[in-house]
Amino acid sequence: MKISELSDRSGLPVQTIKYYIREGLLPKGTATAATRAEYDGRHLHRLRLIRALREVGGLPVASVQRIVAAVDDDTVALHRLLGEAQYALGPRAEPRPEDPDWRAARQDVDAVVAELGWRVVPDAPARDLLAQAFVALRRLGLPIVLRDLRPYIEAAGLVADHEVGGLSADDDRETAVQTAIATNVLYERVLLALRRMAQENASARRFEETGALRRGSSSPARHESSAHTP
Amino acid sequence: MKISELSDRSGLPVQTIKYYIREGLLPKGTATAATRAEYDGRHLHRLRLIRALREVGGLPVASVQRIVAAVDDDTVALHRLLGEAQYALGPRAEPRPEDPDWRAARQDVDAVVAELGWRVVPDAPARDLLAQAFVALRRLGLPIVLRDLRPYIEAAGLVADHEVGGLSADDDRETAVQTAIATNVLYERVLLALRRMAQENASARRFEETGALRRGSSSPARHESSAHTP
Image 1: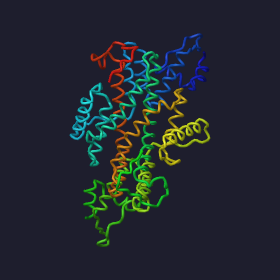
Image 2: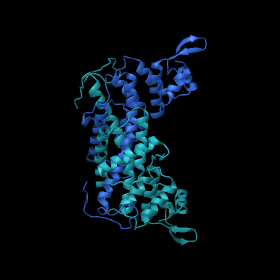
Image 3: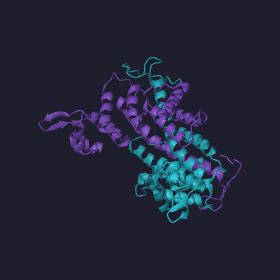
Image 4: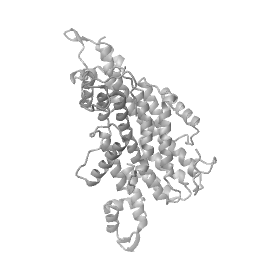
C-alpha cells in the first residue's frame, strides 16, 4: 500500500508516519520509485504498537525507540521485553538515597518483597514508587504497618495473576507488548475507578442509615456500631 | 500562639497562612491588638487538613473551600462529607453524552454497579472514569467483558472495605477527611506500585526459566505450558 493508505488505515497523519520512519521507530517502505515506497501489513502492525505506546502509555519517543528495538531483538526474552515496557511507564519516583527517611522506607519495601518471595529485580522502579508512598505516609503521621499492606498485596496479586495469565507466549512480540501496555495503563484506571466506587459503597453501608438517604441528607448519621453489612 | 509560631508548627510560611485566612479556609485569630492576633490548636489542626488537601490531594483552593465548608457544617453527614472529599480528587473524565460509544460504555458501567448492588450515586465521578476506560479499551480492540472485570471488582472491594473499616465515626470530622484523602491518594500509589511488582513476579514465574535468570538473559524463554506456580 502507499503511504496515504497506511495513513488512512492507521489513523495517523502522513507527516507523523514520516517522522516515525526518520526516528527509526518504523522501518522504511520498499522503494518503488525515486519518491515512492510501498508499505505492508507489518508497517500497519508496528504503527498500532507505536500508537499504544505514545497515546495510551504517554511515552516519549526515546522510550518508544528503546521498546521497539527490544521488540525487534529476538535475543531479548519475552519477560524482559514486558519489563522494558512496564518500566517505561510513569509515574516514577526519584530515589533519594541522601534522605534517611527514604533509605528506611526503601529497606522496608525490600523486606516486604523478600518476605513475599516475589521475583522482582532490585532496581525495579516500582520499588522506589512504593518507598516514596511510605515516606509520604510517615510524614503525614500515618506510618504504614505490614498488617495494613495485606489487603493491597492480596489485591495486587489477584489482578496481576489475571493480567499475566491473559498474555500468551504464542502472540507475536508486538501484540504482547501492545496488550501489556494497554492492560497496564487502562486497567489501572479501571481499578482506580472501581476502588472509588467500592469506597463509596462501603462508606454508605457503614455510615449511612439503612436504605433511606443518599446525597442531600441532613442527618449526621454517625453509628458507633460497625454496621458493615455488604 | 502568634502567627509566627503557627507558621513554625504547621511548616507553612506566614504569607500562606494569611492567604488561607483571606480565602476563608482558616478562621481569623482572636485580635489582641490592632495588628496582632492569637491562634490556637484548632488553627493548627485546620492547617494540617488544608495541607493534606492541597499537597497530597493536589486540590485547587476552590475545592478546599468547599470541603472545609462541609467540614464546618454539622448538618452534612459524615458519609456525604467523605464523598465531597473523594469527588474532588482527580483524575476526572468528562462525560461525553454526544458520543454513542461513550453512552454505551456508561450504560455498561451502570449495569455493572446495579448488578453488584453497590450504593453509588448516579452522578459519582468514578462512573465516568470507568466509562472512559471502557471506551479506550474498545477503541484499542480490547473490549471489556464482565468476566475480565471480576478480579478488579474483587480487588477493589478488598481494599475499600479495609480502608473504610479504618475510618472511625468517633474521629473529629477534620481528622476523618484528612485520613480519607491521604488514604485515597497515597494508598492508590501503594496499590499501583504493588500491582506492578506483582505483574513482574507473575511474568517471571510464567515466562522465565525457573530460578536462573533475571535481566540480561539472552534466552528467549517462551514456554507453551503455563508454568504459573506462585
